[in-house]
Length: 87
Image 1 (cartoon, helix red, strand yellow):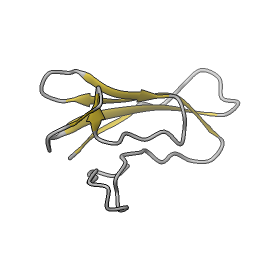
Image 2 (spheres, one colour):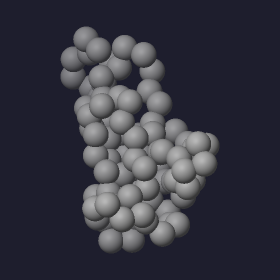
Image 3 (cartoon, one colour):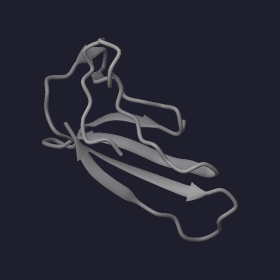
């Protein structure tokens, strides 16, 4: 997972997205504003990404916390939880 992005419309790192292995189902992916815990973004689309906006407004630079819950296709039982932060 990347640890930063720059949503300034210059075509480089404008969208924060996770990368998971092929043949993996994305069960849940959330990005949370770390200070208050407001949910900024959620997707179940493996290609989904966050553009740095919340309710149509650009967010100020800050640290955001994310977690991702992937599951290998065909797996039963256990899943993995990954989490981190991005600026």
